[in-house]
Amino acid sequence: MSRILLTGMSGTGKSSALAELARRGYRVVDTDDPGWREYHEDAGSSDELHRGEWLWAEDRITELLDADDGRSLFVQGCVRNQSRFYPRFDAVVLLSAPAEVILDRVARRTTNDYGKTAVERAMILDDLTHVEPLLRAGCTHELDATRPLDEVVAALVAIASPRQY
Image (cartoon, rainbow, N blue to C red; front, side, top):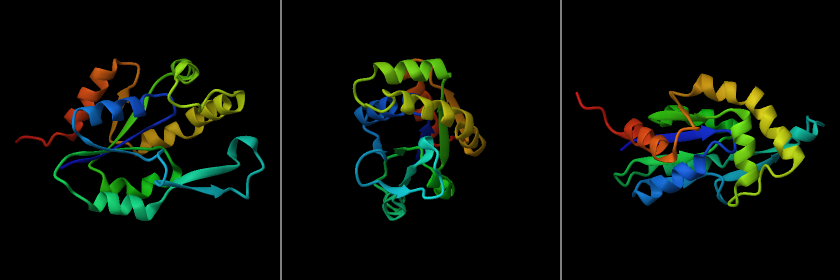
Protein backbone atom coordinates (compact mmCIF):
# COMPACT_ATOMS: atom_id res chain seq x y z
CA MET A 1 0.00 0.00 0.00
CA SER A 2 1.24 3.47 -0.91
CA ARG A 3 0.45 6.72 0.85
CA ILE A 4 0.46 9.67 -1.54
CA LEU A 5 0.03 13.34 -0.61
CA LEU A 6 -1.49 15.42 -3.40
CA THR A 7 -0.77 19.10 -2.86
CA GLY A 8 -0.82 22.39 -4.74
CA MET A 9 -2.56 25.69 -5.02
CA SER A 10 -6.31 26.09 -5.11
CA GLY A 11 -7.56 25.51 -8.64
CA THR A 12 -4.93 23.01 -9.73
CA GLY A 13 -7.40 20.12 -9.76
CA LYS A 14 -6.58 18.29 -6.54
CA SER A 15 -10.23 17.71 -5.66
CA SER A 16 -11.09 16.60 -9.19
CA ALA A 17 -8.20 14.13 -9.20
CA LEU A 18 -9.23 12.84 -5.78
CA ALA A 19 -12.83 12.34 -6.90
CA GLU A 20 -11.68 10.33 -9.92
CA LEU A 21 -9.33 8.24 -7.77
CA ALA A 22 -12.22 7.50 -5.40
CA ARG A 23 -14.41 6.53 -8.35
CA ARG A 24 -11.71 4.03 -9.33
CA GLY A 25 -11.77 2.47 -5.86
CA TYR A 26 -8.76 4.09 -4.22
CA ARG A 27 -8.90 5.23 -0.62
CA VAL A 28 -9.00 9.03 -0.57
CA VAL A 29 -9.13 11.77 2.04
CA ASP A 30 -9.73 15.43 1.27
CA THR A 31 -8.32 17.32 4.23
CA ASP A 32 -10.43 20.32 3.23
CA ASP A 33 -13.41 18.32 4.51
CA PRO A 34 -14.62 19.03 8.07
CA GLY A 35 -12.64 17.46 10.89
CA TRP A 36 -9.25 17.26 9.20
CA ARG A 37 -8.16 20.85 9.86
CA GLU A 38 -8.24 23.33 12.70
CA TYR A 39 -8.27 27.11 12.36
CA HIS A 40 -5.44 29.00 14.08
CA GLU A 41 -5.47 32.75 14.49
CA ASP A 42 -2.26 34.41 13.38
CA ALA A 43 -1.97 37.16 15.96
CA GLY A 44 1.37 38.29 14.55
CA SER A 45 0.02 39.37 11.17
CA SER A 46 -2.00 42.45 10.36
CA ASP A 47 -1.89 41.71 6.62
CA GLU A 48 -5.41 41.10 5.27
CA LEU A 49 -4.05 38.21 3.16
CA HIS A 50 -2.63 36.38 6.18
CA ARG A 51 -5.03 36.77 9.09
CA GLY A 52 -5.21 33.17 10.17
CA GLU A 53 -4.73 29.75 8.76
CA TRP A 54 -6.05 26.24 8.66
CA LEU A 55 -3.65 23.55 9.83
CA TRP A 56 -4.02 19.80 9.79
CA ALA A 57 -5.45 18.26 12.95
CA GLU A 58 -2.27 16.30 13.57
CA ASP A 59 -3.84 13.58 15.71
CA ARG A 60 -6.38 12.77 12.97
CA ILE A 61 -3.70 12.73 10.25
CA THR A 62 -1.54 10.46 12.40
CA GLU A 63 -4.46 8.04 12.90
CA LEU A 64 -5.16 8.10 9.16
CA LEU A 65 -1.58 7.31 8.23
CA ASP A 66 -1.40 4.56 10.87
CA ALA A 67 -4.46 2.81 9.37
CA ASP A 68 -4.00 0.34 6.52
CA ASP A 69 -6.77 -1.42 4.64
CA GLY A 70 -4.44 -2.68 1.92
CA ARG A 71 -5.42 -0.04 -0.64
CA SER A 72 -3.29 2.89 -1.72
CA LEU A 73 -4.24 6.08 0.08
CA PHE A 74 -4.36 9.48 -1.60
CA VAL A 75 -4.55 12.48 0.74
CA GLN A 76 -5.26 15.95 -0.63
CA GLY A 77 -4.18 19.07 1.20
CA CYS A 78 -2.17 22.23 1.27
CA VAL A 79 -1.43 23.52 4.76
CA ARG A 80 1.69 24.79 6.47
CA ASN A 81 2.12 21.85 8.85
CA GLN A 82 1.81 19.13 6.19
CA SER A 83 5.61 18.94 5.86
CA ARG A 84 5.74 17.36 9.34
CA PHE A 85 4.13 14.32 7.74
CA TYR A 86 6.22 14.09 4.56
CA PRO A 87 8.29 11.19 5.96
CA ARG A 88 5.03 9.22 6.41
CA PHE A 89 4.15 9.48 2.70
CA ASP A 90 5.66 7.40 -0.07
CA ALA A 91 5.33 10.37 -2.41
CA VAL A 92 4.45 14.05 -2.20
CA VAL A 93 2.98 15.14 -5.53
CA LEU A 94 2.66 18.80 -6.45
CA LEU A 95 0.02 19.72 -9.02
CA SER A 96 1.00 22.97 -10.68
CA ALA A 97 -0.49 25.26 -13.31
CA PRO A 98 0.07 28.83 -14.50
CA ALA A 99 -1.71 31.64 -12.65
CA GLU A 100 -4.08 32.39 -15.52
CA VAL A 101 -5.25 28.75 -15.63
CA ILE A 102 -5.78 28.65 -11.88
CA LEU A 103 -7.69 31.93 -11.78
CA ASP A 104 -9.90 30.82 -14.68
CA ARG A 105 -10.66 27.50 -12.98
CA VAL A 106 -11.59 29.03 -9.62
CA ALA A 107 -13.79 31.58 -11.36
CA ARG A 108 -15.69 28.85 -13.24
CA ARG A 109 -15.92 26.07 -10.66
CA THR A 110 -19.22 25.36 -8.97
CA THR A 111 -18.11 22.91 -6.27
CA ASN A 112 -16.11 25.40 -4.19
CA ASP A 113 -16.69 29.11 -3.61
CA TYR A 114 -13.07 29.85 -2.71
CA GLY A 115 -11.41 32.19 -5.19
CA LYS A 116 -14.51 34.14 -6.17
CA THR A 117 -13.58 37.38 -4.38
CA ALA A 118 -10.79 39.80 -5.24
CA VAL A 119 -9.14 39.18 -1.86
CA GLU A 120 -9.18 35.41 -2.37
CA ARG A 121 -7.75 35.74 -5.88
CA ALA A 122 -5.00 37.95 -4.45
CA MET A 123 -4.32 35.27 -1.83
CA ILE A 124 -4.02 32.61 -4.56
CA LEU A 125 -1.52 34.76 -6.47
CA ASP A 126 0.41 35.44 -3.27
CA ASP A 127 0.49 31.71 -2.52
CA LEU A 128 1.80 31.02 -6.03
CA THR A 129 4.69 33.36 -5.33
CA HIS A 130 5.46 32.37 -1.74
CA VAL A 131 4.00 28.92 -0.99
CA GLU A 132 4.30 26.99 -4.24
CA PRO A 133 8.14 27.24 -4.27
CA LEU A 134 8.17 25.66 -0.78
CA LEU A 135 5.89 22.88 -1.97
CA ARG A 136 8.09 22.35 -5.03
CA ALA A 137 11.20 22.09 -2.83
CA GLY A 138 9.57 19.42 -0.66
CA CYS A 139 7.78 17.35 -3.28
CA THR A 140 8.96 14.09 -4.81
CA HIS A 141 6.98 14.57 -8.04
CA GLU A 142 5.46 17.52 -9.90
CA LEU A 143 2.63 17.08 -12.37
CA ASP A 144 1.44 19.60 -14.94
CA ALA A 145 -2.16 20.19 -13.93
CA THR A 146 -3.03 21.66 -17.32
CA ARG A 147 -2.98 18.11 -18.69
CA PRO A 148 -6.33 16.31 -19.05
CA LEU A 149 -7.66 14.87 -15.79
CA ASP A 150 -7.34 11.27 -17.03
CA GLU A 151 -3.62 11.82 -17.68
CA VAL A 152 -3.07 13.39 -14.25
CA VAL A 153 -4.89 10.51 -12.55
CA ALA A 154 -2.95 7.93 -14.59
CA ALA A 155 0.29 9.55 -13.46
CA LEU A 156 -0.88 9.48 -9.82
CA VAL A 157 -1.78 5.80 -10.08
CA ALA A 158 1.64 5.09 -11.58
CA ILE A 159 3.35 6.94 -8.72
CA ALA A 160 1.35 4.89 -6.18
CA SER A 161 2.06 1.58 -7.90
CA PRO A 162 4.80 -0.49 -6.36
CA ARG A 163 7.92 -0.67 -8.45
CA GLN A 164 8.62 -4.05 -9.99
CA TYR A 165 12.27 -5.12 -9.98
